[in-house]
Image (cartoon, rainbow, N blue to C red):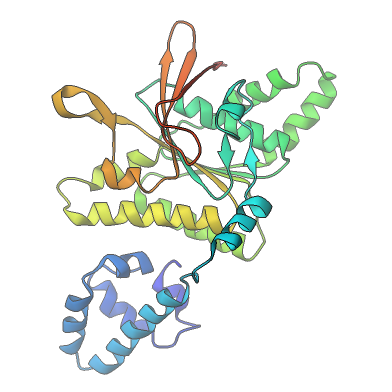
Length: 318
């Protein structure tokens, strides 16, 4: 829902006085409000000369949040939504699509986790190229580590179109590249800003997209975890919920990447902990043979494929 300031025109109780009160406590967005201690906020409001109006503002903001919650849906409604609105998209890697019953699912958040150089970014670039080419729809690519490469995507597109005349290939490449929108972000707050802008454009139908990529999600969250107590964890969960909301409400495939950290005994494990594992619908563990470029995808979490199942595919570098 974004910044409190953007809500003032529609909700007069969220005026400059309310915003100043919230801002003095580090609350600038709806997400900030949701992770704040509500009882402490009310106690602080009661000490102000405008306490009644401030508490009315708090109540109104809670009502707004509660009002956006979706009603309960029965199994028939959920099945119809899945069959009619949630399609699967191809990654254009041989073997992956049938293995996963469709590589990318609309309405789902799919996570690629693996060590450095395991092929996570390459798969993201392939996904962007494949969706923009096959479905002629937009891809939003949020890049947190300067890993987005337009030349690499162009190379992937050209490889798949080599049999066509050169002029046709060039025209197709131009159209495909225009459908891939890249947004560089370098902290979690910039990510929230971009996601809220994207959601607003999707809601107003001035922008459409089939795929949203966040590469790498973990690099934005890791600096806030550990010494920051529950604050970083709350931001992580809030970002995950926002990604799931965008995926579900606008029938978008969301693809995020995560890296590995040292676990017990030094063995590697996915970063961000168990709570994040439950925030995604699909988790795929990637490993890669650097000599052959053969990548192995192991299912860790999937609604219709058993955990532990594996598929191998070959990735190409430009």
